[in-house]
Length: 431
Ligand SMILES: *Cc1c(COP(=O)(O)O)cnc(C)c1O
Image 1: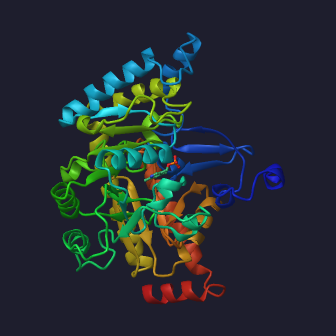
Image 2 (image 1 turned 30 degrees about the horizontal axis):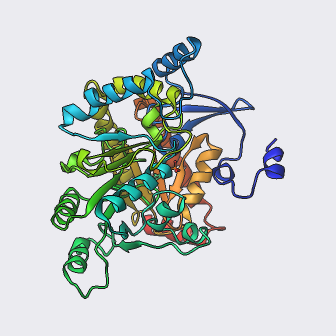
Image 3 (image 1 turned 180 degrees about the vertical axis):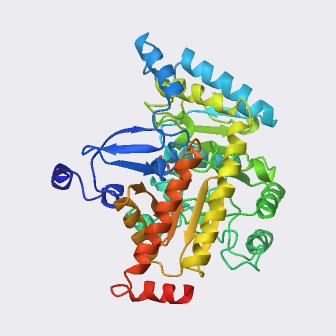
C-alpha cells in the first residue's frame, strides 16, 4: 500500500515515517485513511490547520470563488481577492490591536517569509548579522537555516551558514538565569566579539524546538533592549500565530510590537499555501521588484484567509483556546504526576509539550498513539518532547478523547517494562 512512496519518493520524506498510512479525506479534527480507519488529529499539519480540516464556511467561500472563475494566478498584480484580504485583515486584526503594518506577500511558504524579513532587516539597517536563539526554527532555506538551531538541519545546507549568531533563549541556562543579561552584556561591550546585529528573530514559543515558552517579562525586556540598540525585532509567528496561543498574534499577551512579523501556516485557514510579512511602514524600504517571485499571494488562499477572519470578529475563539488550554494543562499535569513525575509540562494556548526524563519516551508514545488512532508528533532536538497541537475548533469531547489516548498510550509504553529498562525506571519512580 505504501510501496509507491518507498519505491519512488526520496528518502528525504519524513512525517510519513511516523504515520505510515495513506490518507484520503479529512474533516474537522479527524483524518481518514484509504482503509477507512479514522485518526484524531493532534498535529494539524504542524499548526497549519488551526480551524480544523476542510471547515465548511471557508470551503464554501473557496468553492464559490472557483465556480465563478475568480482569478487563480496573478503574480503580484492587483486583484479583488487580495484587496478584500488586505482590507479585512486591517479591519479585523490590525486596527483593533492598534497595529500599523504594511503587507508584503512573499512566496507562499514560511521560509519565504523569513527570507524576506531577514533581507529587509539587513537592507534597512545596513548591517549583516542577525541574532537567533538556541533551539530556534525558522525554515530550511539558507538565510532561515542560518538562524535555526538544529545542527542536523544546519549541516544539510552544505555550505557555511553565516551572518548570524545564536544566543540563549529564555530558560536555556536554567530557571534562575535571565539569558538577556548575557545578550545585553554582549551588545554593550565593544570587546564582546559580537557585531551589532541588524535584527533579532524570535519565536515567543519555540514550537519545533521543544515547546519552549518565553515569559512575558523576558519578551518585554527583549523588546526594550532591541529598541535601545536600534535592532529590529522580527517575530516569527508562523507556527504560534493565527490564534495558536489564544490571541491572533502570540506576542499580544506581552503587549510588545515587533518591527516585522512573519505569518504563514494557518494564515489561509484552509491549508492552502500563503505567507505574509508585516513591517512597520517606516521600514518598507524595498525598491519595486527588489524581492519578487512567481507565487506571491495565491488568490484562492486570499479568499480562504479572508473567510477565516470571521473567527476574529469576536473574542469567542480566543476565550475558547484559553479554556481548552487550561483543560489540557490540568490533564497533562495530572497524567505526569501519576505516571512520570519527573516530566515537564509546558505550553500556552493550545500548544503543549511534555518533556520526559527518558528522551525516547515521546517517540514511543507517539507511535502507540498512532496505533490507537491519534496523530501526535514529537519536537525538540532529540525528539524528546511530545507536542500537542489540536485544532483550535476541536470539541471538548474530541479533546478529552485525545488526552485519554495519550494517557493510555503512555501507560502501555511504560508497561513494556522488560524490553524498556529506562521506562521501567520511570515507572519505578512513579510507584
Ligand atoms: C514551519 C515554520 C517555518 C517554516 O515554514 P515552511 O512553510 O516550512 O517553510 C518557519 N518558522 C516557524 C516558526 C515555523 O514553525
